[in-house]
Length: 156
Length: 260
Image 1 (cartoon, rainbow over the protein chains, first blue to last red):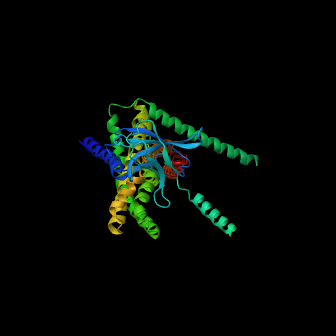
Image 2 (cartoon, one colour; image 1 turned 90 degrees about the vertical axis):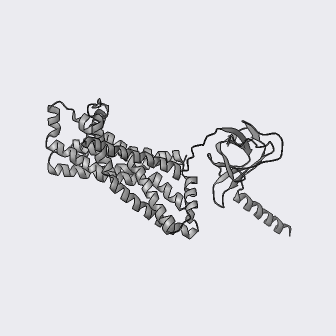
Image 3 (cartoon, helix red, strand yellow; image 1 turned 60 degrees about the horizontal axis):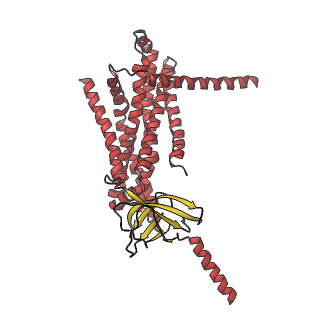
């Protein structure tokens, strides 16, 4: 009887542990059960990816539709090759869509935003997004502004 | 000078010998055939002593640590107008660091010391020798269930600690200080990753549990069988396992979350 009680309490203790992990998974890390309907691969080439990282978000109109799978340098064109994994349910990214790297907030994380175009053909697994906009780099902008200002002064 | 060097070398060798003995003890206890006649019963009893008895201190400390974290985080974040980021601050620091580490330190003080004292007293009163006399292997009957119980109980305790601490943080942050509940939770869910944060926390606490019980059991098994010996061994258990937890935490953090 004593042993049985102890075993019941220990069982409840272990159950509390499992429930804690489940609660942390669902409520705290936002794990959803119906995830992974599968995804397909798109590739985009950027001149400059700024601070984009792997596992970064891919959004259309601000809605999360995929993740950045890998980033590496393409040795031929010497541009950044970014592989995007897009949810299978989003199968209407047209051929003339534009992928651009944006920043969430002023100092926030970088993400890829896709603007859908009006073409008939739809991109499928392994296709390439041709139109891209590189990351907005603050230093470059400041450099451009400063050099314009100095050039104007010099002309005067 | 020679004398000094000699003593230094002797103490180094003695430390190595202790480490070796502890490793052999762990290996023998873990690889011996499990005692199935009352195997699960022994393990359940140890889980009860090590885990269920530690539950109260874990829950109470978790609640207060969550509340304090929320209060401190809020006073800093609200200066930058970023009080909504409280959820991610609290959940990340709890899941990655504070949960496993504080639970492990409490566990070392609460369960590790008791384990050392119990085994030490068993040795001092020659119960262990008596067991061997009647053909019961003390490694199988005494040591192994305790090692397993520590490895199982520690992750459970750390996760319960995390849950209670996040509740405490919600209580202070959302209900008292008035951070918006929706942005509190959604910020948290955006940042926390299940594999990276929750599972790594579970792995951390598993390692801590294994190390703490290993130290506690070895200190008890290796005790000088006097009352002073038991007192010294209990103290050593708490000191060594706290230091081991903090040092291992740095190593594990560097491996898990380090810059890649």
